[in-house]
Amino acid sequence: MALRHAVLAALLDGEYSGYQLAKAFDVGVANFWHALPQQLYAELTRLEKEGLVAGRQVIQENRPNKRLFHVTDAGRAELEEFAAAVAKPSFIRDDLLVKVQVADRIGTASVIEQLEERASAAEAKIELLGKLLRQLRGDADEEEFLRRGERIGPYLTCLRGIAFEQGHRDWCLRIATVLRERRTTHAER
Image (tube, rainbow, N blue to C red):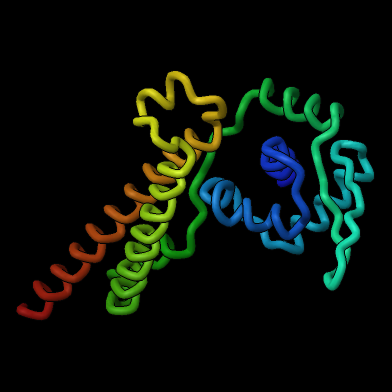
């Protein structure tokens, strides 16, 4: 997947300025695709040149003018083509895993601390995504929303984000405990 597809997917929900798109990414899309605001602005420019999004200027008083973007028919076709293509398997690339890999050779104190920090960050993300899920489904319970909700794609990706963060949190806490116990056991010898 390229950033272009994540941007097009986010713009399906409405017309956004670059700033609004960055905010939407922070909340809903960041659990599966990370992008810096400047990357989003550059991608919007490319997508507009390719005719996949269209922008319009909005004149504002006492504030700088802004551009709002929406997906064109060509952009929808691009997303349909992307959705029909076989998805590549995902993989993990994480500096913390390299540190865990060598922890028993270089010392564990800083690795344990980083694992615990990651677990705390995952817990905060779980809470944020949980709030987003409640906001998306409104008064409906989850099963009812999944059966009858108008737009469930963002909800489903948030469910995946929560499952990922829960697994990540649990793994970090377990590995921190293992390393701490090993450090204590080795100190007693």
